[in-house]
Amino acid sequence: MIPYASSLDHVGYFTQNIEDAALALEVLAGRDDKDMTTSDLPVPEYSALLKREIKGKTIGVFKTVLDAVKDPVIHDAVEKLADDLKAAGAHVKEVEMPVELMELIAPVYKTIANAEATANHSNLDGIRYGMREDGESVEEVMMNSRTKGFSSYVRARFVIGSYSLFDENQDRLFRKAQKIRRLIVDAYAKMFEDCDVVLAPAAPNVAPLIESASSVRFGVDAYEEEHMQLANFSGYPSLTMPLGWEDGLPFGICLSAKPFEEQTLFDVAAGLEDLIKFERKELA
Image 1 (cartoon, rainbow, N blue to C red):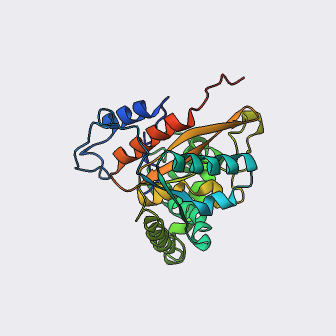
Image 2 (cartoon, rainbow, N blue to C red):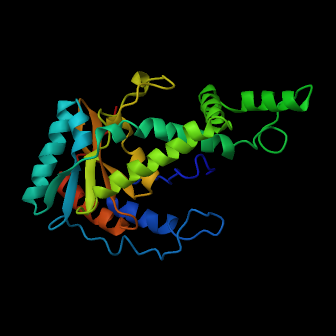
Image 3 (cartoon, rainbow, N blue to C red):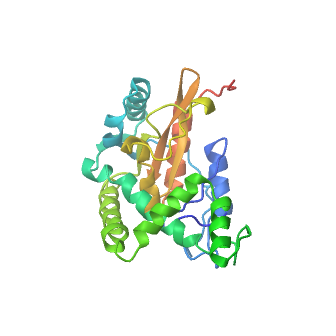
């Protein structure tokens, strides 16, 4: 792994079930003296302490996101899940964030991420680090190396990031984005004041087929798609898990918890795993 955007990066991993996810975090979490973003707190034995329970837990349903989901299958499945949670003894409540802040998630993320990525990868110039492509001068070597060494999508991100870091633009773009990020995180934190976890649709659509996936570099931003960047902004632990199928393609939910409440997150997720009873299928 290499850093992309240092203040936003999260380590992600895939497992077959919640118990394995808990076990994997035991290995990945903890202090690393070569990583300034790691914590000194001891890492619990999440898998050994796992309680598959939702009774008595307070679960917030992220209404702002759910209301924006247009697919009736996904929308109805999440609402049914909320009813099933109530029947299983959980306390379910709707939680919201101001729409004006939700609409700023994507532009703020792109501004900060592209700027930090540009700074983190500035040494990959073919002179000090990175692949080297020859040229007639130092400047040409750097230009050729960075042109050939990065895809057009990455180069576009670096151009945007460089623009945000120009001296004349930092206050107007980069620092302003950082200030808005703080407002977003503060509003996000309020949703957890009376909740153990917050639940939302992971995406507004089912998983796309490879041949139907969009190749658009920078599409229209929609917070029902971008809302999981809130975990990157805040550092709150978050996981996604499957909920159902639509036309043979899966869709899921996202669960998030307060900082260092990973055990609660795993406990509720394991309880949901038993409640949902997701049917595995072999995809064609």
